[in-house]
Length: 320
Ligand code: GTQ
Ligand code: FE2
View (cartoon, rainbow, N blue to C red):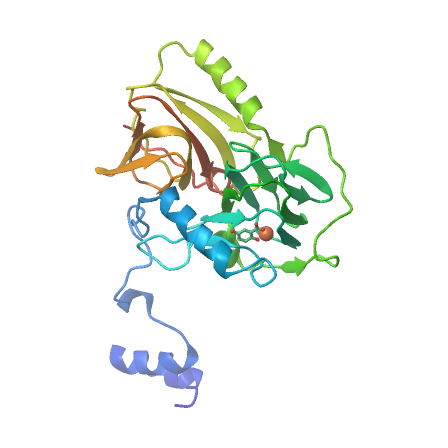
C-alpha cells in the first residue's frame, strides 16, 4: 500500500479504515493496542535462582581438557536466568571462569564494566588491569571498569576459579557496546602496586566485617561496601550473616547477584527457598522480597545495579 496523503488520513470514515492507513506509515493507535505499555508495578520477568559451584567447577574442569585460551577468549560459563535468554538479571550477567596453571587469557577492553570475585586460587593467579598486576586469591574482588585493559594469568600450580559479574545486558540495552583486543595479545608491561583502587583484598574485607560486627551489637548481619560505589553501574558489598538470625526481608527496585564467600545457608525470595553453599551464586531480581539465613554464619558478596536506579531516579524500597 502506498503512503496515504494527509487528506486521505483526514477523510477516514471508520477506525478500521484509519488503522489500515496507519500501518504503512508505521504508526499505531495507542488506544487500540492489545498489550499495555504501562503497568502499575514491576513485572517479574526474571526469576530468583541458584547456581551450584560444584557443578560449574566440574564443567570448567572438563572445559579445561576440551578448550584452551588460544581458542576461547575466556573459558567462562554464563549463568542464564531460567525465565529469559542470555542474562542473569535485567542489567547484570554473571559467569564462572577458570584458567589453568601456565595459561593466559589475553588482554582486551570493553565498555561493559566488570569485576570478579575469586573462589578458588593459589598464589600466582592474577589479573593485569591497565598494566597493574593484581593478585587473585580467594575472597579477593578485582575491578575492570569501562574501557580498562585486562587479561588474566595463572603462574600458580592449581586451576584458578572465579565469578565474573558484568553489566553487559545494560550495555546491550543502551547500545554503547565497544570491544577491542590488546595490540600485544597479553599485556606484559606490568607493575606490581602495593595497593590499588581496583583490588579489594579478602584480608582487608574480613577485618572490616569483624570491626562492623563488634560495633553492631546483636543485629542479624553487617554489610560493608567495597568502593563508593565500585563502578558507575554496580555497587559491591560483603554481608556477614549472624548464625541463626534471618536478615530483615527486603524488597527494592534493584537487581542483586550474590556470591557465597563462606559458609552455607538459604535465601528466600517471594516465598521460594534457595539453599546455597560456598561458591554458589544466587540472583534476586528487582522488586522481589527476600531474606537470608544461615545456621552457622556465612559471608555473601553482593553486586547490585542500585547506582543505576538511583541516578535515574528509579530506586524504591517497599515498606515492610
Ligand atoms: O574476564 O574479561 O565472563 O570479557 C565475560 C566477558 C569475562 C573477562 C566474562 C569478559 C570476561
Ligand atoms: Fe573482559
